[in-house]
Length: 393
Image 1 (spheres, rainbow, N blue to C red):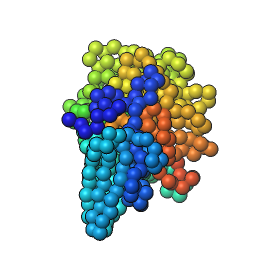
Image 2: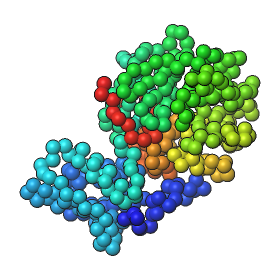
Image 3: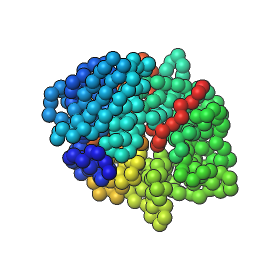
Protein backbone atom coordinates (compact mmCIF):
# COMPACT_ATOMS: atom_id res chain seq x y z
CA UNK A 1 0.00 0.00 0.00
CA UNK A 2 1.33 3.43 -0.92
CA UNK A 3 1.85 6.03 1.77
CA UNK A 4 0.75 8.81 -0.55
CA UNK A 5 -3.03 8.83 -0.61
CA UNK A 6 -3.74 12.46 -1.44
CA UNK A 7 -5.30 13.92 -4.57
CA UNK A 8 -2.98 12.07 -6.97
CA UNK A 9 -3.34 8.28 -7.27
CA UNK A 10 0.17 7.96 -8.70
CA UNK A 11 0.03 4.36 -9.84
CA UNK A 12 -3.64 4.30 -10.75
CA UNK A 13 -3.61 6.48 -13.87
CA UNK A 14 -1.49 8.01 -16.60
CA UNK A 15 0.26 11.28 -15.91
CA UNK A 16 -1.41 13.04 -18.79
CA UNK A 17 -4.76 13.09 -20.51
CA UNK A 18 -3.93 14.02 -24.09
CA UNK A 19 -7.44 15.43 -24.50
CA UNK A 20 -6.16 18.48 -22.63
CA UNK A 21 -6.30 17.95 -18.87
CA UNK A 22 -3.14 18.79 -16.94
CA UNK A 23 -1.78 15.94 -14.87
CA UNK A 24 -1.41 16.32 -11.13
CA UNK A 25 1.77 17.17 -9.24
CA UNK A 26 2.70 16.81 -5.59
CA UNK A 27 3.25 20.33 -4.26
CA UNK A 28 6.10 20.59 -1.76
CA UNK A 29 7.20 23.54 0.37
CA UNK A 30 10.28 24.09 2.55
CA UNK A 31 9.74 23.87 6.29
CA UNK A 32 12.13 24.44 9.21
CA UNK A 33 15.76 23.78 8.28
CA UNK A 34 15.01 23.28 4.59
CA UNK A 35 16.68 26.53 3.53
CA UNK A 36 20.08 25.02 4.32
CA UNK A 37 22.26 24.03 1.33
CA UNK A 38 21.29 20.35 1.72
CA UNK A 39 17.60 21.21 1.96
CA UNK A 40 17.66 23.45 -1.10
CA UNK A 41 19.50 20.85 -3.16
CA UNK A 42 17.07 18.12 -2.13
CA UNK A 43 14.07 20.28 -3.03
CA UNK A 44 15.62 21.13 -6.42
CA UNK A 45 16.21 17.43 -7.14
CA UNK A 46 12.64 16.52 -6.24
CA UNK A 47 11.31 19.20 -8.59
CA UNK A 48 13.72 18.10 -11.34
CA UNK A 49 12.24 14.58 -11.10
CA UNK A 50 9.07 15.88 -12.76
CA UNK A 51 6.80 14.70 -9.96
CA UNK A 52 6.94 17.62 -7.51
CA UNK A 53 6.03 21.29 -7.79
CA UNK A 54 8.18 23.47 -5.53
CA UNK A 55 6.24 26.18 -3.65
CA UNK A 56 7.50 29.07 -1.49
CA UNK A 57 8.10 28.67 2.23
CA UNK A 58 4.90 28.63 4.33
CA UNK A 59 2.73 28.12 1.20
CA UNK A 60 -0.14 25.62 1.58
CA UNK A 61 1.35 22.51 -0.02
CA UNK A 62 0.63 18.79 -0.12
CA UNK A 63 3.92 18.10 1.66
CA UNK A 64 6.30 20.10 3.83
CA UNK A 65 9.98 19.14 3.97
CA UNK A 66 11.93 19.91 7.13
CA UNK A 67 15.46 19.20 8.34
CA UNK A 68 16.61 19.02 11.95
CA UNK A 69 20.38 19.14 12.54
CA UNK A 70 22.17 17.88 15.66
CA UNK A 71 25.87 17.53 16.47
CA UNK A 72 26.47 14.40 14.42
CA UNK A 73 23.05 13.57 12.95
CA UNK A 74 20.48 15.13 10.64
CA UNK A 75 16.84 14.16 10.43
CA UNK A 76 14.75 14.69 7.31
CA UNK A 77 10.97 14.63 7.59
CA UNK A 78 8.07 14.94 5.13
CA UNK A 79 4.73 15.92 6.62
CA UNK A 80 1.36 15.86 4.85
CA UNK A 81 -1.54 18.29 5.15
CA UNK A 82 -3.10 16.28 7.95
CA UNK A 83 0.19 16.40 9.92
CA UNK A 84 0.78 12.77 9.04
CA UNK A 85 4.50 11.94 8.80
CA UNK A 86 5.03 10.44 5.36
CA UNK A 87 8.77 9.91 5.42
CA UNK A 88 11.66 10.15 7.89
CA UNK A 89 15.32 9.82 7.07
CA UNK A 90 18.31 9.99 9.46
CA UNK A 91 21.92 10.27 8.34
CA UNK A 92 25.31 11.02 9.86
CA UNK A 93 27.14 14.34 9.80
CA UNK A 94 29.34 15.69 8.41
CA UNK A 95 28.36 14.65 4.88
CA UNK A 96 31.18 13.47 2.64
CA UNK A 97 29.16 14.19 -0.51
CA UNK A 98 26.10 16.40 -0.16
CA UNK A 99 24.91 15.91 -3.75
CA UNK A 100 25.04 12.12 -3.49
CA UNK A 101 23.22 12.20 -0.16
CA UNK A 102 20.49 14.48 -1.58
CA UNK A 103 20.00 12.22 -4.62
CA UNK A 104 19.79 9.08 -2.48
CA UNK A 105 17.22 10.70 -0.17
CA UNK A 106 15.18 11.91 -3.17
CA UNK A 107 15.18 8.38 -4.60
CA UNK A 108 13.96 6.97 -1.29
CA UNK A 109 11.25 9.62 -1.01
CA UNK A 110 9.89 8.93 -4.49
CA UNK A 111 9.99 5.17 -3.91
CA UNK A 112 8.17 5.56 -0.58
CA UNK A 113 5.46 7.86 -1.93
CA UNK A 114 4.84 6.21 -5.29
CA UNK A 115 5.95 2.61 -4.93
CA UNK A 116 8.10 2.99 -8.05
CA UNK A 117 11.68 3.87 -8.85
CA UNK A 118 12.47 7.30 -10.24
CA UNK A 119 14.39 7.86 -13.48
CA UNK A 120 17.38 9.35 -11.67
CA UNK A 121 19.77 6.52 -12.50
CA UNK A 122 18.90 6.44 -16.19
CA UNK A 123 21.19 7.78 -18.91
CA UNK A 124 20.76 10.01 -21.93
CA UNK A 125 22.79 9.43 -25.10
CA UNK A 126 22.99 12.14 -27.73
CA UNK A 127 25.16 13.57 -30.50
CA UNK A 128 27.26 16.71 -30.18
CA UNK A 129 28.83 18.66 -33.02
CA UNK A 130 31.43 21.39 -32.78
CA UNK A 131 34.08 22.87 -35.04
CA UNK A 132 36.90 21.81 -32.74
CA UNK A 133 35.80 18.22 -31.95
CA UNK A 134 33.54 17.22 -34.83
CA UNK A 135 30.79 14.70 -34.01
CA UNK A 136 30.72 12.77 -30.73
CA UNK A 137 28.35 10.24 -29.20
CA UNK A 138 27.95 11.46 -25.61
CA UNK A 139 26.35 10.03 -22.49
CA UNK A 140 25.00 12.26 -19.73
CA UNK A 141 23.19 11.55 -16.50
CA UNK A 142 19.59 12.35 -15.55
CA UNK A 143 20.62 15.82 -14.33
CA UNK A 144 22.80 16.72 -17.31
CA UNK A 145 25.78 17.32 -15.02
CA UNK A 146 28.12 14.42 -15.87
CA UNK A 147 29.17 13.67 -19.44
CA UNK A 148 31.42 11.10 -21.05
CA UNK A 149 32.25 10.52 -24.71
CA UNK A 150 31.21 7.04 -25.86
CA UNK A 151 32.47 7.26 -29.45
CA UNK A 152 34.24 9.73 -31.71
CA UNK A 153 35.15 7.85 -34.89
CA UNK A 154 35.21 10.85 -37.23
CA UNK A 155 32.54 11.47 -39.84
CA UNK A 156 28.90 12.24 -39.07
CA UNK A 157 27.03 10.49 -36.21
CA UNK A 158 23.24 10.19 -36.04
CA UNK A 159 20.31 8.47 -34.32
CA UNK A 160 21.56 6.59 -31.23
CA UNK A 161 19.08 4.01 -29.90
CA UNK A 162 19.12 1.97 -26.66
CA UNK A 163 18.52 -1.74 -26.31
CA UNK A 164 15.87 -2.83 -23.74
CA UNK A 165 18.55 -3.80 -21.18
CA UNK A 166 20.09 -0.29 -21.44
CA UNK A 167 23.63 -1.63 -21.80
CA UNK A 168 24.05 -1.22 -25.58
CA UNK A 169 23.48 1.46 -28.21
CA UNK A 170 23.30 1.47 -31.97
CA UNK A 171 23.85 4.58 -34.06
CA UNK A 172 24.28 5.62 -37.69
CA UNK A 173 27.76 6.54 -38.91
CA UNK A 174 28.38 8.42 -42.16
CA UNK A 175 32.02 8.05 -43.18
CA UNK A 176 34.14 7.87 -46.29
CA UNK A 177 32.56 4.55 -47.30
CA UNK A 178 29.00 5.83 -46.89
CA UNK A 179 26.42 4.94 -44.27
CA UNK A 180 26.71 2.15 -41.74
CA UNK A 181 25.19 1.34 -38.35
CA UNK A 182 27.44 0.61 -35.39
CA UNK A 183 26.66 -1.27 -32.21
CA UNK A 184 28.32 -0.09 -29.00
CA UNK A 185 28.48 -1.68 -25.55
CA UNK A 186 28.68 0.44 -22.40
CA UNK A 187 31.08 -2.19 -21.09
CA UNK A 188 33.43 -1.25 -23.94
CA UNK A 189 33.87 -1.99 -27.62
CA UNK A 190 31.86 -1.34 -30.76
CA UNK A 191 31.47 -2.95 -34.17
CA UNK A 192 29.48 -2.44 -37.37
CA UNK A 193 26.06 -4.01 -37.76
CA UNK A 194 26.28 -5.66 -41.19
CA UNK A 195 23.05 -7.00 -42.70
CA UNK A 196 24.78 -7.38 -46.14
CA UNK A 197 21.80 -6.03 -48.02
CA UNK A 198 21.19 -2.58 -49.47
CA UNK A 199 22.32 0.63 -47.78
CA UNK A 200 21.62 0.59 -44.04
CA UNK A 201 20.45 4.04 -42.97
CA UNK A 202 19.04 3.46 -39.49
CA UNK A 203 18.42 0.66 -37.02
CA UNK A 204 16.55 0.02 -33.78
CA UNK A 205 16.61 -2.75 -31.21
CA UNK A 206 13.56 -4.89 -30.50
CA UNK A 207 12.65 -6.75 -27.27
CA UNK A 208 14.02 -9.93 -28.84
CA UNK A 209 17.75 -10.67 -28.79
CA UNK A 210 19.28 -10.65 -32.28
CA UNK A 211 16.19 -9.11 -33.93
CA UNK A 212 16.47 -5.59 -35.29
CA UNK A 213 14.39 -3.08 -37.18
CA UNK A 214 16.32 -1.75 -40.16
CA UNK A 215 15.73 1.17 -42.46
CA UNK A 216 17.28 -0.06 -45.71
CA UNK A 217 17.59 1.55 -49.12
CA UNK A 218 17.63 -1.27 -51.69
CA UNK A 219 15.92 0.01 -54.81
CA UNK A 220 16.46 3.73 -54.38
CA UNK A 221 13.89 4.30 -51.65
CA UNK A 222 14.02 3.42 -47.97
CA UNK A 223 11.83 0.71 -46.45
CA UNK A 224 11.64 -0.85 -42.99
CA UNK A 225 12.64 -4.47 -42.44
CA UNK A 226 12.79 -6.88 -39.55
CA UNK A 227 16.17 -8.62 -39.53
CA UNK A 228 16.97 -11.84 -37.70
CA UNK A 229 20.74 -11.55 -37.37
CA UNK A 230 21.54 -15.18 -36.54
CA UNK A 231 19.33 -16.58 -39.29
CA UNK A 232 20.23 -13.81 -41.76
CA UNK A 233 16.58 -13.47 -42.75
CA UNK A 234 14.64 -10.34 -43.66
CA UNK A 235 10.96 -9.60 -43.39
CA UNK A 236 9.75 -6.42 -45.07
CA UNK A 237 7.44 -4.42 -42.81
CA UNK A 238 6.87 -1.71 -45.39
CA UNK A 239 7.24 -2.10 -49.12
CA UNK A 240 6.22 0.96 -51.09
CA UNK A 241 7.60 3.27 -53.75
CA UNK A 242 7.56 5.98 -51.07
CA UNK A 243 10.22 6.56 -48.41
CA UNK A 244 9.60 4.91 -45.01
CA UNK A 245 11.77 5.70 -42.00
CA UNK A 246 11.97 6.34 -38.23
CA UNK A 247 10.71 2.94 -36.96
CA UNK A 248 9.42 3.02 -33.37
CA UNK A 249 8.26 -0.24 -31.83
CA UNK A 250 5.66 -0.16 -29.05
CA UNK A 251 6.77 -1.48 -25.63
CA UNK A 252 4.79 -4.71 -26.15
CA UNK A 253 6.34 -5.21 -29.59
CA UNK A 254 2.96 -5.37 -31.37
CA UNK A 255 2.64 -1.94 -32.94
CA UNK A 256 5.09 -0.16 -35.24
CA UNK A 257 5.07 3.59 -35.78
CA UNK A 258 6.94 4.91 -38.79
CA UNK A 259 7.15 7.96 -41.03
CA UNK A 260 6.18 7.94 -44.71
CA UNK A 261 5.57 10.35 -47.56
CA UNK A 262 3.19 7.92 -49.29
CA UNK A 263 0.29 10.40 -49.05
CA UNK A 264 2.24 13.22 -50.69
CA UNK A 265 3.24 14.79 -47.36
CA UNK A 266 5.35 13.48 -44.49
CA UNK A 267 3.05 11.78 -41.96
CA UNK A 268 3.12 9.15 -39.20
CA UNK A 269 1.63 5.70 -39.77
CA UNK A 270 1.08 2.71 -37.51
CA UNK A 271 1.28 -0.94 -38.47
CA UNK A 272 -0.32 -3.68 -36.40
CA UNK A 273 2.33 -6.41 -36.56
CA UNK A 274 -0.24 -9.04 -35.63
CA UNK A 275 -2.79 -8.32 -38.37
CA UNK A 276 -0.55 -6.48 -40.84
CA UNK A 277 -3.00 -3.56 -41.08
CA UNK A 278 -1.57 -0.07 -41.59
CA UNK A 279 -3.25 3.12 -40.36
CA UNK A 280 -2.41 6.74 -41.03
CA UNK A 281 -2.17 8.47 -37.63
CA UNK A 282 -1.54 12.16 -38.37
CA UNK A 283 -3.66 14.32 -40.66
CA UNK A 284 -3.12 17.88 -39.44
CA UNK A 285 -0.25 19.74 -41.09
CA UNK A 286 2.11 18.82 -43.92
CA UNK A 287 5.02 17.42 -41.90
CA UNK A 288 4.75 15.14 -38.85
CA UNK A 289 7.68 12.93 -37.85
CA UNK A 290 9.94 11.52 -35.13
CA UNK A 291 7.39 9.39 -33.22
CA UNK A 292 8.35 8.11 -29.76
CA UNK A 293 6.22 5.77 -27.62
CA UNK A 294 5.47 6.46 -23.97
CA UNK A 295 6.68 3.68 -21.64
CA UNK A 296 3.06 2.57 -21.12
CA UNK A 297 2.39 2.32 -24.86
CA UNK A 298 -0.88 4.23 -24.39
CA UNK A 299 0.26 7.30 -26.30
CA UNK A 300 3.20 8.68 -28.26
CA UNK A 301 4.94 12.00 -28.84
CA UNK A 302 5.99 13.43 -32.19
CA UNK A 303 7.12 16.67 -33.81
CA UNK A 304 4.93 18.56 -36.28
CA UNK A 305 5.45 21.64 -38.42
CA UNK A 306 3.36 24.61 -37.24
CA UNK A 307 3.75 28.04 -38.85
CA UNK A 308 7.33 27.42 -39.99
CA UNK A 309 8.61 25.91 -36.77
CA UNK A 310 8.32 22.47 -35.15
CA UNK A 311 6.31 21.77 -32.01
CA UNK A 312 5.87 18.67 -29.83
CA UNK A 313 2.52 16.87 -29.87
CA UNK A 314 0.94 13.96 -28.00
CA UNK A 315 -1.45 11.45 -29.56
CA UNK A 316 -3.16 8.41 -28.05
CA UNK A 317 -2.25 5.01 -29.47
CA UNK A 318 -5.52 4.74 -31.39
CA UNK A 319 -5.20 8.16 -32.99
CA UNK A 320 -8.42 9.50 -31.46
CA UNK A 321 -7.01 12.60 -29.74
CA UNK A 322 -4.08 14.91 -30.32
CA UNK A 323 -2.65 17.74 -28.25
CA UNK A 324 0.19 20.22 -28.74
CA UNK A 325 2.31 20.33 -25.56
CA UNK A 326 5.09 22.76 -26.51
CA UNK A 327 4.93 26.45 -27.31
CA UNK A 328 7.07 29.57 -27.60
CA UNK A 329 9.95 30.65 -29.81
CA UNK A 330 12.23 28.15 -31.48
CA UNK A 331 11.62 24.78 -33.10
CA UNK A 332 11.07 21.85 -30.74
CA UNK A 333 11.90 18.43 -32.20
CA UNK A 334 13.03 14.84 -31.52
CA UNK A 335 10.96 14.06 -28.39
CA UNK A 336 11.97 11.21 -26.08
CA UNK A 337 10.18 10.01 -22.92
CA UNK A 338 11.84 9.53 -19.57
CA UNK A 339 11.69 5.87 -18.45
CA UNK A 340 9.06 6.74 -15.83
CA UNK A 341 6.93 8.54 -18.44
CA UNK A 342 6.81 11.82 -16.51
CA UNK A 343 9.01 13.98 -18.71
CA UNK A 344 9.98 14.65 -22.30
CA UNK A 345 13.48 15.30 -23.55
CA UNK A 346 13.65 17.26 -26.80
CA UNK A 347 15.85 19.41 -29.02
CA UNK A 348 15.17 23.13 -29.20
CA UNK A 349 16.68 25.27 -31.93
CA UNK A 350 17.16 28.97 -31.34
CA UNK A 351 19.39 31.29 -33.34
CA UNK A 352 20.47 28.33 -35.46
CA UNK A 353 21.89 26.24 -32.56
CA UNK A 354 20.33 23.03 -31.20
CA UNK A 355 20.34 22.31 -27.45
CA UNK A 356 18.76 19.62 -25.26
CA UNK A 357 15.78 20.62 -23.11
CA UNK A 358 13.42 18.91 -20.68
CA UNK A 359 9.79 19.52 -19.83
CA UNK A 360 7.00 17.75 -18.02
CA UNK A 361 4.73 15.90 -20.41
CA UNK A 362 2.06 18.57 -20.09
CA UNK A 363 4.56 21.12 -21.45
CA UNK A 364 5.36 22.82 -18.13
CA UNK A 365 8.68 23.32 -16.33
CA UNK A 366 10.85 23.75 -19.45
CA UNK A 367 14.60 23.94 -18.81
CA UNK A 368 18.00 23.20 -20.36
CA UNK A 369 19.48 19.79 -19.67
CA UNK A 370 23.17 20.63 -20.15
CA UNK A 371 25.32 23.75 -19.91
CA UNK A 372 27.47 23.14 -22.99
CA UNK A 373 29.17 26.10 -24.73
CA UNK A 374 26.92 28.17 -27.00
CA UNK A 375 28.50 26.97 -30.26
CA UNK A 376 28.17 23.22 -29.48
CA UNK A 377 25.21 21.57 -31.21
CA UNK A 378 23.25 18.84 -29.35
CA UNK A 379 20.75 16.59 -31.10
CA UNK A 380 19.27 13.08 -31.58
CA UNK A 381 18.75 12.31 -27.86
CA UNK A 382 17.89 8.80 -26.66
CA UNK A 383 16.78 8.19 -23.06
CA UNK A 384 17.64 4.79 -21.62
CA UNK A 385 14.59 2.65 -20.76
CA UNK A 386 15.96 1.80 -17.31
CA UNK A 387 18.92 2.33 -15.02
CA UNK A 388 22.36 2.14 -16.58
CA UNK A 389 25.74 1.04 -15.31
CA UNK A 390 27.95 4.06 -15.94
CA UNK A 391 30.90 3.08 -18.17
CA UNK A 392 34.35 2.98 -16.58
CA UNK A 393 36.13 4.48 -19.59
